[in-house]
Length: 126
Image (cartoon, rainbow, N blue to C red; front, side):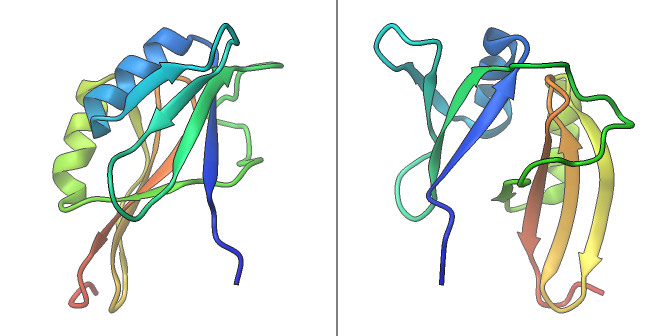
């Protein structure tokens, strides 16, 4: 079975994206040498870390279909996180939705227009 081991966030405004993800998830960033690339540290224990880099090409819009893998972050409370996302400048792309018997999922757009998911485990979700 193949598993994700890294993700990358492409951003028009790298500083704004770092502020967004620091505020919403508490992630830490470290520039990789003198490169326009920041390592993303998401925490200790199981999970994956990633990278943040300047976007090449045009910015996605609300009409742009998803053309990449959407990374999903496990959270304790999707509803509470949606409020934090909006307070940090992000937008809800798909509201909290039940994944019957598994939990709740929602998708958001960050300040750069990138889609990401949030998942709350709940075997009673209907």
